[in-house]
Amino acid sequence: MKNTIITISRQYGSAGRGIGHLVAEQLGLECYDSQIISKIAEESGFNADYVKQNSEMTAETGFFASLTGMDLYTYSNRDTIWILQSRIINELAEKGPCVIVGRCADYILRDKYDLLRVFIYADDEDRIRRITEEYHEADSYPEKHLIANDKRRAAYYDLYTDQKFGDYHYYDLCLSSSSLGIETCAHMIAEAYEKKTAE
Amino acid sequence: MKNTIITISRQYGSAGRGIGHLVAEQLGLECYDSQIISKIAEESGFNADYVKQNSEMTAETGFFASLTGMDLYTYSNRDTIWILQSRIINELAEKGPCVIVGRCADYILRDKYDLLRVFIYADDEDRIRRITEEYHEADSYPEKHLIANDKRRAAYYDLYTDQKFGDYHYYDLCLSSSSLGIETCAHMIAEAYEKKTAE
Image 1 (cartoon, rainbow over the protein chains, first blue to last red):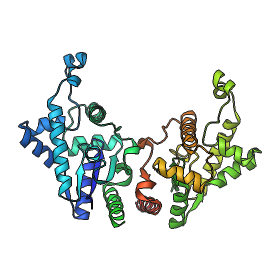
Image 2: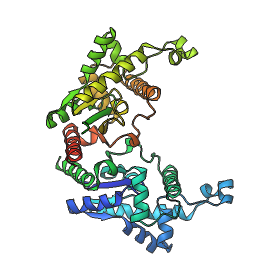
Image 3: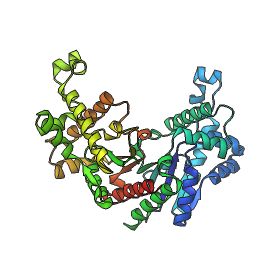
Image 4: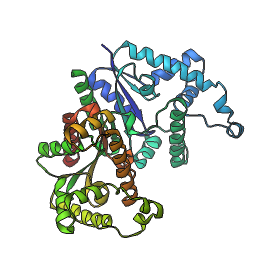
């Protein structure tokens, strides 16, 4: 029997990562998130920050690359990271049922595993509060930081998958953590998983 | 205190209507669906089928209207239906907490009520099976019928609201009835409602 894997795609700042960990805790499953970055860093020799910046988002390309489109037509470090990421995610999924946060796992594992594909989103206001107060990731212009990250994440999906980030067609359930709250989101996902695996 | 209203937007053939009725039953609420059509028919003098065809979808415009764009620039029967529909939906929401299926209730009631905005979707395969075997609405080309209906529903949203049909930004939760099943969808919505109203 195929392992059932929960993949959590999420808007930047939507608490998708926290929800993923809560779901895993409730169901007694492993949750893979930053371990994937560490593994890629270890195997590629790139540092973890560089991997993080290039494993889910397009790079902030320089002026020359944006003019020539060079970034798209050469075999880049990001391509190397994508290949490693795909292999590592497949290895993790093989181990047993688990929760995987981000990293296009829904796309990478499609057709190979039984997936519960979740998309988590949130209001901009909550996302800005979270990236400044909780993640401490935003510079002095958090709105700009948010928009740039959204664009880079969507562009990454466009580049490496044939899916559209946030389009309901590619998910089994899409939940707003702003409207429902983190605990309710986690509880709903766990419920959907239990229902799915009981069949 | 404002009434909390559950609005269920749904893809054609996704069982959104059935889910709405199940949710209402579980929560002991009224569920408004075809009654809205009857009320509009009663007040406008149009027959119920005509109202149904023009209260949620753009018309199948003729060649002349499509050439001149006349359909968009004249005050149409559909405009009359929209105005009546808005008034009737507001009156129903005023009565007390309830479930309203379709008819852009999420847009009509925005900012006036506390809403739980749900979007239900399903795989094309399930939708085709449902519209042929359960609704008996499709002609001999169900795929064509489905595509035409999807387009007309999306065009209606474009015309009368500033929302994009099926875009997660406008919903609190989006559920695939194909992946989760009708009962689980209903249960999740009821859970979200109970959580929301308990706050």
